[in-house]
Length: 103
Image (cartoon, rainbow, N blue to C red; front, side, top):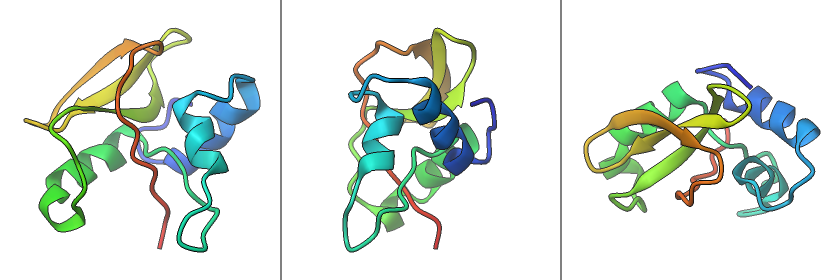
């Protein structure tokens, strides 16, 4: 799941390779909301676009959010929605998740 732009494919790759149901990608993949079931965890660049449009999209906190872009088997990218800083951290970190879908 190394794409910085294709969260849908990253989510598929993560779900297919991760049996733990509590993972962020699985939460998005399993989501059924608003009559839609095609939710996914955004990739790093998609998440940054959301940060740039957070006032329009709404519903964000000023905390860290996971992306579906992995750095390696232990680390994944996240974004701090206070200032737009992107960094990577252990996949065991307790960050927020914002599922998205294409429209």
